[in-house]
Image 1 (cartoon, helix red, strand yellow):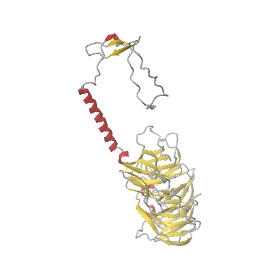
Image 2 (cartoon, one colour; image 1 turned 135 degrees about the horizontal axis):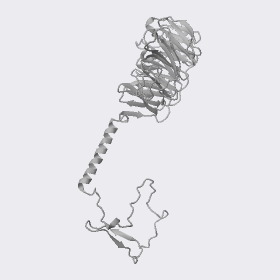
Image 3 (spheres, helix red, strand yellow; image 1 turned 90 degrees about the horizontal axis):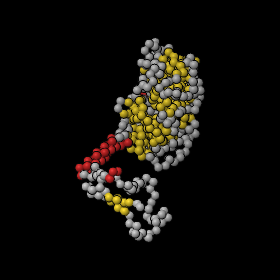
Image 4 (cartoon, rainbow, N blue to C red; image 1 turned 180 degrees about the horizontal axis):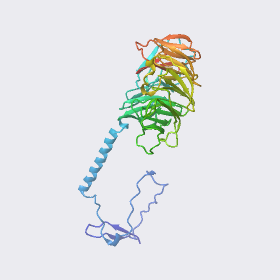
Length: 465
């Protein structure tokens, strides 16, 4: 015979009460899954409390819960309030609390291609502040601008904002990496917060914390991105996973992995999964050029292809293509090409003003642009064209304002007062197109999206058609 246990007063032990065998049943049909009404299946529901089937051990009285007293309940409530307030404080002060992420509901509509020939006249469609984009960004039928702490995806024709990503942090730099936009934010003493965005919708696709220095630029090479700096270079894969760090690594885990210590870095370039950097190291009689791999078994253990001391100081790397590197030696007024074995392959005289090549460029990246056929370097007063295949010089355009790009099927180079349309092979001027830049006379960097030509004029991006 089963027993049930009735609750007893505090001064008496609990007593078993025998079940009444004569007690009639209710006659109701037992409830099953088939006849249950108003019930639901909840996977995470709390299980029902178990019913005691045996008396307490030794017949002692049941112990009263320690939380039955008023004082205990007040203490529990106070703890709950503290936990809730702490959660709110953490939420308010977290990075996400100061982030605005407004994505586009759909991908932007398609654009017609650029005209086969550069139009005879170009009119300004719109302009917007974009101080954090060294090069105009046109991708996925959108134009991306970045200023202060805000990255915006815009309609190429109107400049209307389609998507927005902003933080209460200052932007360090923004660049197009493949088909994604990498936005690097400043936090504390460095540029450590990186967010990757889809260019068409603004959707976040990856994030990471890094150790980039203030003033960093992004060097993009296929599936890798490298941050520049004077003491540390960081390389990520296209999903922002760190693949290599070179220089003064913070929080060293494996000591003695870096090839040299005490060096500072000048210009940086990349190609074919390799990074080239100008180093200035104690004990070297001149600058050093080093090429290392973008990835290795360990991210703090660089695999160096070669490192060679150059013929002079203040050297700068203009570009890399395959295993080749194009380097400027200002003291000798030479352009030299190095091969994958670290040996000099060719040298060419360089006729540019000293002011163009004396100082390292801001961010450690030379002002260049690439087309399917060539590499174009803006020295500061001239545009020099090189073969994309072997980096040999082709021609020079004097009195230019920036490097050249292909718009439609023609090469255009910015000049004072407009654009020069050139034969890409010979550099011969086909014609010029006037552009009213409203008094702006500084460097101009070009890009395009569909039939819209983009000009980066210092901290301002301008759309032309």
